Image (cartoon, rainbow, N blue to C red; front, top):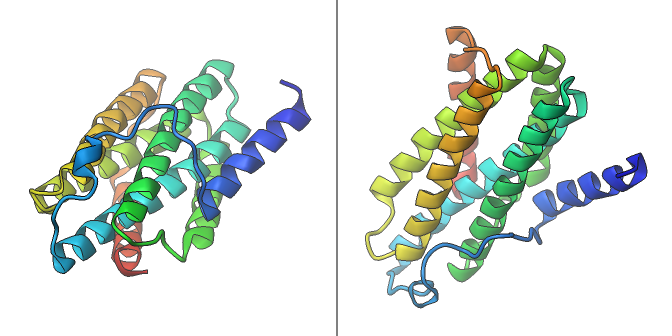
Length: 209
């Protein structure tokens, strides 16, 4: 793929991440019959809030992977990041689909989330491949924790959302392990704490906005 083709592809990915229209290569988890489960208004609102958080997480993931691929020094690492990003695009599309089914919307702050994550990913990538991969691994670890907490609070009747979140959780575990196996370093604890604090701000805002 020549540089201009790669630029067009990555720009399209960025645009779909921010404004919507992501395409999934895998079908949305959960049966179609479960898409419109009988949820009351409060259950629907809560499920939508959690799926909006998950969608924002995938917007951030696309920005992180794109920026880190841009400065990765090793072609094998670029390929690994590209593979994970493709699966994260499935997550993005699934969450967008579910939000529409729930009669809700994606976060109005998506451009902000994307820009901030791109800058963070670029900084991690410039620090070196081992730190970039370590950042991916720690990010996926924290995302896995969020998804597990969502499975505990999503309405039991919302089989569609639960199936999506569970598949996302399994994929995130694989992505984190792949980053570690590729040479990712464990991040210093202060960096982990900062990431957790930033994640808290994002999840609190995305639940409502």
